[in-house]
Length: 245
Image (tube, rainbow, N blue to C red; front, side, top):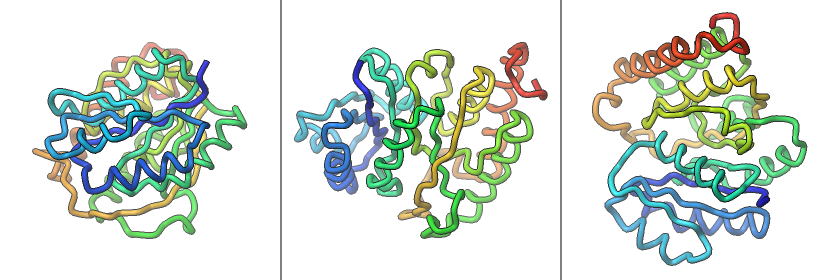
């Protein structure tokens, strides 16, 4: 089996993808393969990715959503017989140098999900996030912890390492930005071993849009909560769920 796949969901990232791929390749070297999942980009992302024949490339014909890109990355890792898949964003807010920390945590073999946390250690906080994003993250982290008996400090960080064998036990379908709300419920239901790893809190573009109604913080929060509790209700019979289920 191949050990590690680094999967990078992208959408119109022509400004960042050159540097991000260069740094990931420098850190990963022969320790991991790299996959770019292009979620229907309309800029030069596809052309730039094509300049790197050693990097696998998967493209959606249209924009399907962040969650859909992650699900496709997980499926790719499974078909490719990888043991682990690390997901990271391409907007220069996930430092490629932190891959070394994930490689070390994977080598420890003590968890199924190694989840980056931007709030685990104050020394890693370089920028203050927009107030509405921090408020929503804190509120939803509390909701997840109380309902699933977890001890997370950051529910929305996309910098994660996932044991591929464990992912096969999850039935993930949420295509959009609410994907973590479904993901954590399935992880708890499956009884996966979760640990957090400190990663840098960097906000290069505090004005970045989610798109549509999700740009409204109240509507975004309501949507995330709906996805979370709908998933809780669907998985209520699971005996390994926390007491709330």
